[in-house]
Amino acid sequence: MRKGRAEGVIRRRSQRTRKGHISTRNTILIKKTKDKHKSKHHKGDRHLKIEFQELSTDDYFSKNNEFSTWLKEEKDVFFSDLSSESARQLFSDFVKVWNKQKLESKYYEGIASGPRPSGKLVQIEHALTAVGSGQTSLGIKAANGVVIATEKKLPSILVDETSIQKIQLLTPNIGVVYSGMGPDFRVLVRKSRKQAEQYHRLYKEPIPVTQLVREIAAVMQEFTQSGGVRPFGVSLLVAGFDDKGPQLYQVDPSGSYFSWKASAMGKNVSNAKTFLEKRYTEDMELDDAVHTAILTLKEGFEGQISGKNIEIGIIGTDKKFRVLTPAEIEDYLAEVE
Image (cartoon, rainbow, N blue to C red):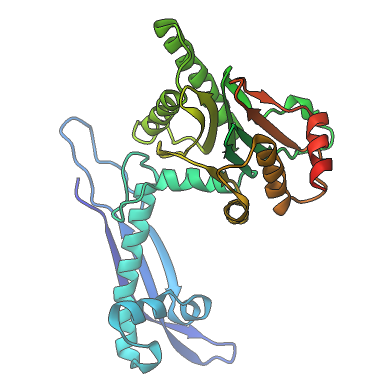
């Protein structure tokens, strides 16, 4: 099957004004076609859709400045310096380039496993957008433990806040929090618990934090290249305590993961990371880390923060991860105010 074409044709069109005079303006007719496909194994030809889009040069220039930007960047000229004939010819060239880019964009958007010519995976960019629009979550590694915290804003006052749990236990010594799409998070939690159980059944010991993070990242990476699926629209912060001490990892939709001293994700990530960079010290204790986590959430929090609209999970030297109750969070809030 031969490649499709995008043609730009400049024509003169006459229009009759209200006073009966004839006026002429330059009009661009954009024609998108695809060649017919013939096959020995199929009867007849494939029906093709031909679309026409009409753009007036006057309307085009009044509505956007893509053409002017293209002239400056690609041709190193300004529109005001061009003659009428040169402008029409260059505009025709621009239409062909513009249509080609649009067709390529639509093609690559439907392919999760194929990168664009720029080298970016479009579906991963969409997944990161979902993470960036999610509620703020953060994690801090202290000298004697790890704390993870997140906002928990309810979609309605009628929702029972106890039914929403954004921090989950993966193993007795590992917990996780997310920013992004909740349903995707639940799938990853289920897969992570299954991996941890298989490891424990085989080796008769708890799975190390790094090993579990590696397994989670492998699952997320596989969903960036498999057909019929899309990348997970979540980023995770995994907190744990094992023989190597307290550990904090962040896993992104692409399957990449890094160990962090402190990190944040979600819609307020810039302010949160800036605040953490100013307040974090490697020798801080677990209680100080909880206070810092609360203060970081308050930086971009809309409304009154309380034990019901945030969640905090901690793990210390006892190597038992637990989620703080609303009453415990209220006590910490009273200490920082």
